[in-house]
Length: 68
Image 1: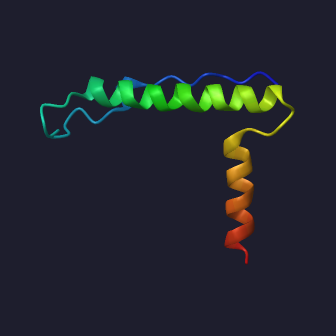
Image 2 (image 1 turned 30 degrees about the horizontal axis):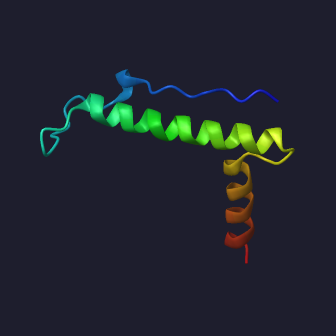
């Protein structure tokens, strides 16, 4: 199973947001991309070892616990 690397869609960012500390929307986009890249790398490593993707494991555990 090939794992697709997500990309930030900067067009979806709120251009009207008032950002503190001289932050820019580009700063948020870069931080989001870093998180996407981290999860991609983790998931590729898990799948190469025959395990499930992290988000699938967490989602199943969350559903199980919410039904207790």
